[in-house]
Amino acid sequence: MGFIHVTVAALCCVVVVFVGFPLSSNAELDPSFYKNTCPNVSSIVREVVRNVSKSDPRIFTSLIRLHFHDCFVLGCDASILLNNTDTPTKIESEQQDSPNSNLRGFDVVNQIKTAVENACPGIVSCADILTLAAEVSSVLAGGPNWEVPLGRRDGLTANRTLANQNLPSGLFNLTQLKSAFAAQGLNTIDLVALSGAHTIGKAHCSSINSRLFNFSNNDKPDPTLDPSYLQTLRNTCPNNGPETNLANFDPTTPDTFDNNYYTNLQDKKGLLQSDQALFSTSDADTISIVNTFASNQDAFYESYKASMIKMGNIGVLMGKNGEIRKQCNFINKKLVDQLDLASVVPKKSLEEGIVSSF
Ligand code: HEM
Image (cartoon, rainbow, N blue to C red):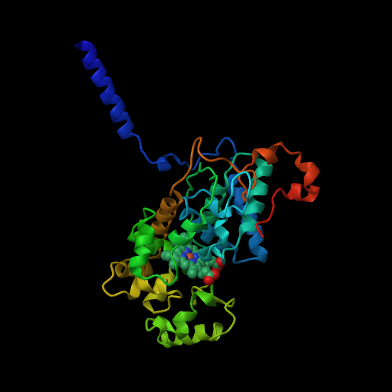
């Protein structure tokens, strides 16, 4: 009898312990994860990004967007960085999917990885590099800083179909946006706060042309566009003009990470249909959130930081899952590891450490 009591009590303890443990691995990410193994990783990432920005000021926006596009497909596992390969497993790169066709910054991630590998070989995942690069980019663009939880590992595959399904389109209405974010465990405040990343960066004319000339197939512009802003955008993106022209997301302070994105929405100057939907959808619960962020930059920053951390926790691989990739564009291949790389790769490429994704 006593034995049964003890056993039942022990089982209860086990159950309590298991239930008490966070089932999601998120809680285990830790800003001090590399404290002993790669203590300078954040400053290494920052210095590479800062250097690149001297010749490519748009790199901040591109790196922030890369992290988002990584996390929405298979979680924040650096799957977005994988190239097409046939061996040892077939990988269909997510980069070829249409929502990803305009992504930039892959080579810069590779530069960062090389610098990090030089300091701490085999320690830091490409997924953590993407997350750190997004934070560093916010700061360098004049936005908020935060402690980045770390300890992600890199995935062993990519999923092009999911990239197509999960990534929201600039033509989405509010219901579609909310559902794309809800599918990733992100709520309406996350949607509005993270969309604030569109306070910097550019979009191709191909992303907005239908708003300017043929909204809802009626040969008229989107009625939620301010008329003078419409004219400005038509100058940048003429009808049947080059779809590769670029329009700034924020016509007021295009390169500064501030809360003008939200005042723009109030002024009917959101660039994408999906941006303006946050403010111009009748009776939407997002309107009051836009108004709060428009009038209070600190409130925006606080929500943005919290939502970036939440997004950075999506589907992370930790512990023994995944791997630490040697090169961000390829999973580690036993075969390649066993080869004498020096005999097949020119010395310069080895020193640069990385094969470009382009
Ligand atoms: C809410 C749903 C979202 C939609 C529909 C969306 C869509 C887009 C589109 C269509 C572009 C322009 C692509 C091009 O034409 O080159 C873009 C750019 C960008 N997006 Fe988003 N996005 C969303 C959310 C986000 C989030 C959550 C972030 C980051 C936290 C983000 C960061 C960016 C940045 C920084 C750029 C500019 C990139 C550059 O200049 O290279 N977006 N987005």
